[in-house]
Amino acid sequence: MAKRKERQKKGYLGHRSHGRGNVKNRRGSGNRGGRGMAGIDKHKWSWAVVNVRGCYFGKNGFTRPVGKDTKVAHLFDINQKAMLNQLEKKEGKYVFDFDGKILATGSVTMPLSIRAESWSRNVEEKLKAAGGTISKLHEGKKAS
Image 1 (cartoon, rainbow, N blue to C red):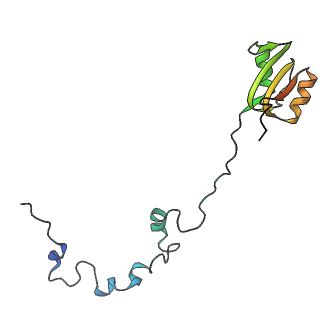
Image 2 (cartoon, rainbow, N blue to C red; image 1 turned 120 degrees about the vertical axis):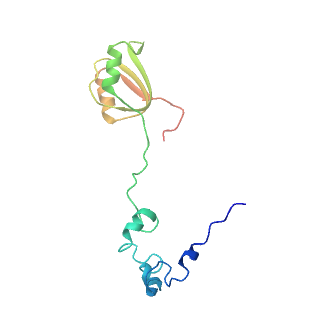
Image 3 (cartoon, helix red, strand yellow; image 1 turned 180 degrees about the horizontal axis):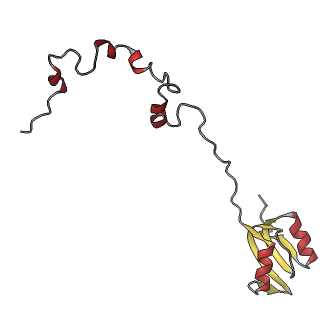
């Protein structure tokens, strides 16, 4: 049968302090720097950094507000696709459908017919100047 581990106390029999220094050293809560969470932001700070993460000192850090991840397309890119004949052509206009927002970056040199969820103000002006149009992608659905 396996022998059990001997109690540590046995090695200290006949010794007054059991390896803990003076008799007074282990007495009261002053020995541990106060009771409970006392001194957690002062003399127990290094211990708190490791062991008490995020549950004692109120708000911790900054969390960014959650925003919508909307897809974005630029007029410049759409115009480039039209110039390279990568878009379908109907009734003399290049057709582009996009489930996101169209931004008015760049210029339009060809008549484009764009259907999208949303767009910025300047998109309409630039498209009309080039002989193009813009409309909602889902006409039946309500915009959110």
